[in-house]
Length: 209
Image (cartoon, rainbow, N blue to C red):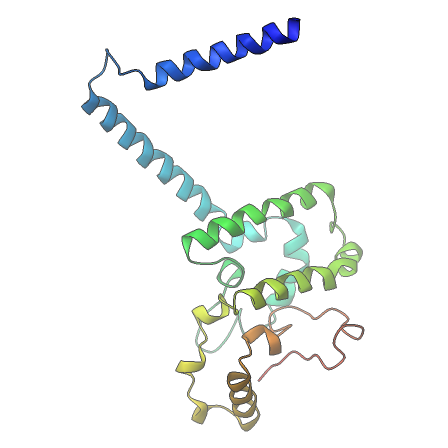
């Protein structure tokens, strides 16, 4: 009986709240409510977007030692980090979409990484190496699904001057284009060390062409 009374009480409270929300205000004009709502929306959007961008830079990415001590050190040895043109592809350039809707989805997915940070899943080098193949496979799968979308922010078959490429690169890119391949099909390990691939793909290579 008490449960029934409690439910009825809760229902009454919800009904009262709903009545208040849909009832026209007698204190404030519609114009005031619209202006306040607009300003609140702008402030919320600005705060949300600021928080998004604060978590979308290299310093944030390597703020946990799991990233700084492992994949970041590998990345520093690659052409994506240092090259003759001075153009650098940072962590979010390769791992976070630029389009807003895809970026939000990626940020939501990253909450799982925060969980494993708290659990200490890869908080030592040994743990990280034990998970390297799984972590890399997750990234490769995601990139394959999006047709290497983040790679194509800088690289595109249509913009390539095959006359400036070596014969091996021309052959590989031409065959890849004809076969409908995507960047990650051949360029695994281009910015980070490859895991042990013998049981997965014995013919896998860095693809440094």
